[in-house]
Length: 624
Image (cartoon, rainbow, N blue to C red; front, side):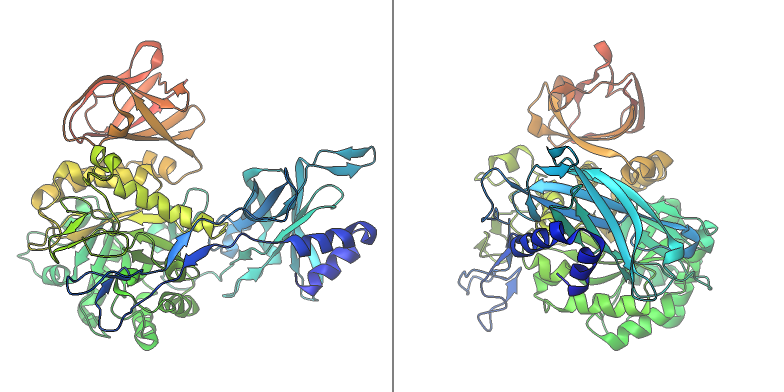
């Protein structure tokens, strides 16, 4: 605990009560240790690795290490006691003076793994009472170095999502974040808790550049620029990594039947140019023309530095040319650094370099491995984490490329530690897509293990490619393409960027239709990125493993997404359940899929008589 905070406690509160409490908290402020299992990384010499594992038949298996494991319960606290983990973090990753206020999210989580000791008692004028309300203060230093309260709130113990607003007048805009002290305690402050959130208040832009930020309530990205008439606009990114060779071949080519305009007309709202190699990857003149077209089309750019993110000079040069364009949405540094075995410090170093030059845009990267140095590559190194889990048309237990088995310590099957259609994992036979939602949820779970209050949203990268002679036998079908996307969304993904465009005509057709019918629908951003409660629904009437469904609930309305993961028709009647309760709907509006598939049945039960193979459905329902 910093000495100035200790002095603040003593001067502000009863010393007779606080000094013992502080000493107790200081001695027992133990955090469960998140363990990264040690092993050999990039060794032995001369062995080619992917995700830390040898994959050639000429090499032997060894433990790659680098696995994050679930923290254990903390010892040393009397039986029956708990820990309270106080988490305070800003709703938005950055604010501008024009926002006028900033909102903090306050969580007070009881658990057995992290935080400070909590016992269910406090005292007031009448004696000993239960400790059910947590008094929270947000404190900053003023210009004279004095501690001043900027906000106060009382929240229930063991609650999440409490909101408190602070005025931005106390936070002059600057590029450096403000460090806030969050102090919580019972009514008498016999038990105390603290945390140190960061608040970023940036100067208003005085050029044509955009500002993009993450909203921690919905997990989405929002942007403000001259394109949006300087109003904040939420974006659910849905698009492709896109070949730069294709992009530059269309610019200034009047004979091209497909170009950036037709790309945007398909409904895609983002483009991710894949750079060629070299420290200066793009032709400056052509790339500037590309950016100008994107500005005109409101086609947002995800700028990729996969070949250059470890070169500070190249980063500075590239940012100087792109950072002031209104179509810039975010940066992308490392492409599968965990697979390639990039230095584990490289992503954080690049992140800090980018933020120093351009604090107005988020940074992203993609991880390929299931669990290999996740902490090193992501903590303090990215704002958004992408996953590219590719189980479709792949043999996940035996490498057809390298003629070896694939397991947790050996082999490369194109989908790290995946189990699709592996008889040793029956649940992955019942649902051959199960690796996809599992990976999305794992990436959120790992962040929870790392005790982060704010979350790095996870975006998904569906397969939309086929490389002959590779791990994958074919292109995905149109049905598989949408299944891949919706499974990710059902489990919390906040953006979809498939690999790679150009793709086949049928995949372009189905993804374009999905973009226009679903992503462009204002209801989608309202529910998928808004202040809603997402719940996973279970199917009854068929094996629950055969149907993946989720609902985003707001009041008496919900957006529902339903995916059949089976390659045969499922016969009903099929209903959905939210826990022990049947999911009911008095009105049903189909947004995507066959409008006759799901309907209001007897007693207003949302039901279906049958589901076609790999069918997908998105709709809005009124539940009361």
